[in-house]
Image (cartoon, rainbow, N blue to C red; front, side, top):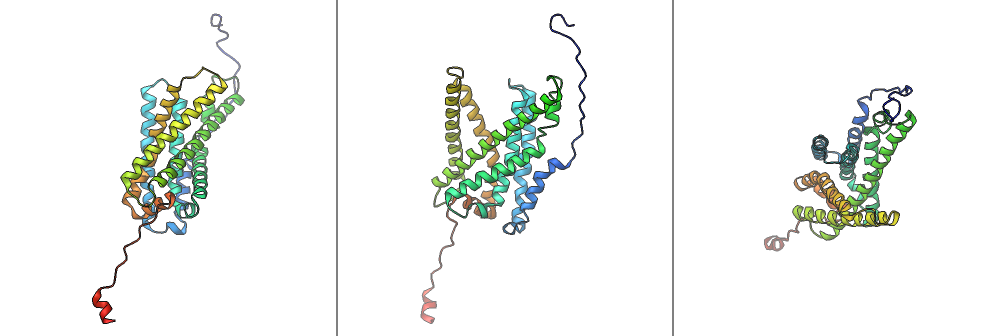
Length: 285
């Protein structure tokens, strides 16, 4: 016995742990490789999609290490949920860029639904194969919970939180892109588009934070201040914009992906100016 706190040892718990293979982390990359086989993506220009993906994968990895080492007062699980969702969202954005000829060719509202669908499906797929909802997430809780069944449930609860976060991210990014497309309608300027996208992300996350605060007040009146929720919304503005920025830079320097972005935003494609016949040619005719 440890004072009045109870027994120092409990009954042993049997848990069969199996090391994860190398294939699950590679599956999102293989999914992007499969999308490159589509007919609209034939050509070396489409292969530049690997550059922002690699930059984001490395960047979010080092951000996650930095957040865990700094100890900002939040549990590591909170950081893992955010970083895993942002990392998975990058694959969704890459798939959106590659599927733009199919997603952005119809009415704006239909394009909105397709964009949310692509971002959510590829993001959830990436989370499902890389986050480890049922194995190490559960193993990390074995010592603190009464049995392996509770630990597995905790792992799946983390997965459900990541899915909800990813669905919210997909909805917010799609709404921001649609609003930016309306603001930039008729012409495309990279700097102006980035500015509008940042402002719309700020507005959408502020609205989402206000809605979340209202829901908290309805569930438990007076228990939650608005400032922490707004701070979380501002933090997510940075996360979502940082995820989109490498793809926006790629679209600004690559004519191939510039047209893909215009298709998603329903911005009119550039039409070369008509060349009027010279007077000498008309006289000769």
